[in-house]
Length: 477
Image 1 (tube, rainbow, N blue to C red):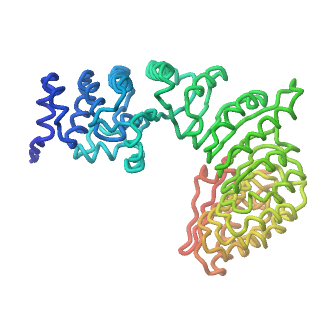
Image 2: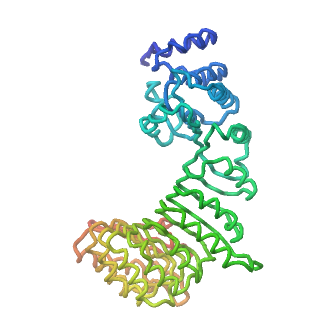
Image 3: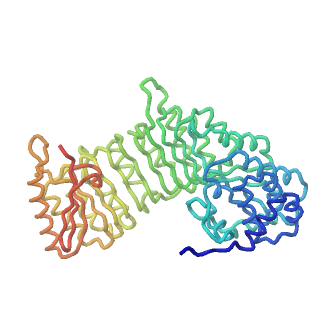
């Protein structure tokens, strides 16, 4: 038997006003604040453009989280809202009732709409909206530029009708509009279009930059001055930056790029995938870091022994919480270099990834004392390295005293393989039983993964013990 839920007074008032938009316009002046969000939602989903335009001019909140209502961007509703903003911008003084200073087009603000509507109907899922209180000071500056927040993922597919309309609107109103974004992601877009879009964005608002496309070093050098203007950046990810065989100005480009790090005073998280241009030049980038890093990833590239030495001596890595050197060959390097590096970060390190580094028994043996002093370590992954059963037993004993360690990802012992590098599952099962017995004798319940793949989560066998669980994964032949 279904329960009848009668419409709320707010809903009835909203439906009544939207049936007569002339009445709605007249009512906005005296409409109680709590009626606005519900009426706006009805007008938005019913695409009552004139009502939307009028409501924007009387919006009684500092922020209008429009993006939280847009499951699919619609140019018509955006145009209505922007038309309302144009009326506001044309006025010398902000209307007494209107407090609007921020138009948020990101997929946020769901809590705001849910609170005022009394339900989650028509609200798409995403992160919650930041408290409005943080923007209260803006109401005291009615002539300050109005801020428009967007999510920027630059790809050729980004240039749809909605995005183009918004960019054209902003371009004509640069003085009175600040276009802001917290996170910039670049996938596939010409540098010409990237620079055109970013010329309309307040670069000092950006806090995270991801470059997920293949660029030549010269292209990154062109982008670097823009990066330097993003002086609030806290997280920077660069991937697949290659040097062309024809490039003859590598050193000049590297200087153009690394010198911009001098301007990034808030950088905490630096991740660089396949940065081939850093080989033999890592010290140039490290010298330009202005603040201590919390996370550093330099992966899938070649570095020199001198690079690793400079890394271990860098003052701004002493507070690292995460270090990822996966895919960086370390086979021929002195074991002491990695030991010195771990000693430097032992007090703060929480995540350590050394997958596919070509680490041998002697190198792992050298870092075990330093590893055992990483008291904050939570995750340790060393998959894809050829290690013996003896050194793995030693590893388990040295890490047994780490109280925070909850995820351990290890390679299948080299004794599991034949001389032709074929994995013998029967032998692997025997070694797994031996490891289980070792951990039983150590006396502390633990969970570890053993894998013949660099990514243990791809495996399909699980071995369990009443106190110790060993997830054992393998790549099928």
